Length: 274
Image (tube, rainbow, N blue to C red; front, side):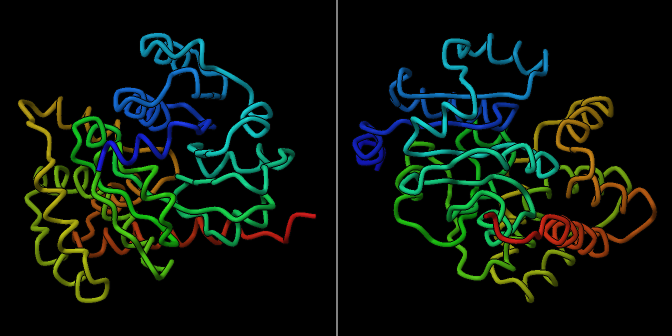
């Protein structure tokens, strides 16, 4: 499978817009699987800590502009936060490029309206699981070319035919942090996953995955550090953890996470790009 994926990618130029923790991890995994370093372009938002991470990863020579990425790339990953979607509004995405969004909650219709091209959504699990080769990635709509692009990364791919399922999957990839927090409070979680699984087939499998990738926690400080790393301001993991902190059950917290995904989706609905 890996050789097939690498052969498919050999003539491609891949651009990653937004090379923070997730984008950098994807770049590193592509390179470690054999993708040519000279065919990779990346951009970042100017953060000093992100630049330091790119330096440590040996990616400084790959830094480019968003404009150049759109001009040269045949495959473009968008790995920025949903709040930064408007920063892409003046870019001209090539009609023939494969554009792949990693932005949680932003629908395919909203992405097309904002960017002017068809976009495939993916929702990957955390960078730690991707680096360990134990990640999961949801793809909507199912797309053969995207599956081949992801093949060298060695992750488990879930192809989703109903976009509304992405809300449940997005909450699902937050489960490792949520389970750790629930354990701290002595809250059961398995029954909640079973109930959600009755509404969204496959969710119980994601719950099993989450339990399988839980980090080894040696101290309360390590637990808190892991949970902090998984949270982003205004994101789905934050919504779940905040709900648990306020006294919600695990089921209520999961529903709050899915609700936050829907809220983000509604926030970025906009008229078609002219």
